[in-house]
Image 1 (spheres, helix red, strand yellow):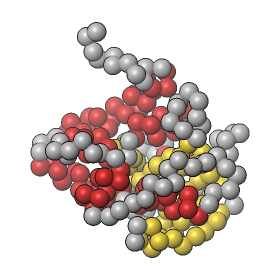
Image 2 (cartoon, one colour):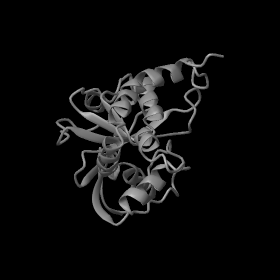
Image 3 (cartoon, helix red, strand yellow):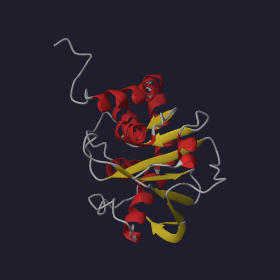
Image 4 (cartoon, one colour):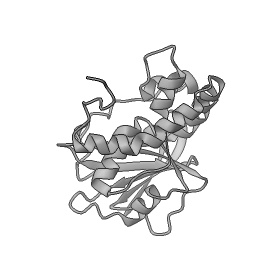
Length: 218
């Protein structure tokens, strides 16, 4: 079942499609990349469960999949996220990649994480949250009002959908801006190596090494 809404998100008119359970059959992402974000009941990989996955291919549509948490049976979504020919763009991909790995059984690769990219590129600041990076690089303001809301509810509100869409619709533009800075500063290859390590970092988090620096001497 799909619910279609026309939304104005951060000044942009977009179509947001809410899909119950899975992406529709025949869904095709145009281009070689998709922006992806997840919503869960919290930020604990031990306690909290994946509720929504939202994505866009950079066009005028955002797609939000409200997962069946009893089965996590979403073959079309899993196929898309596991497609190695499509780059997945995240912000703080460490958490999203881990959630997708744990609950959907999919290893996301290749990936681009705009938070890692920001930390390596924007060394003049310690503000690397999505709202801050978008404000500086894209001159747009996004609302985080719905960040702490019940994503496990049976019905997702229009306000929640607008928030979910806002978390992905800017990621393609952020990737492009940050890539320019990384290349200028000679750090793009380092960033790419960090992105490639994200599935391993996610597996370590799931296995219980989330607070342990396994590379430290101590």
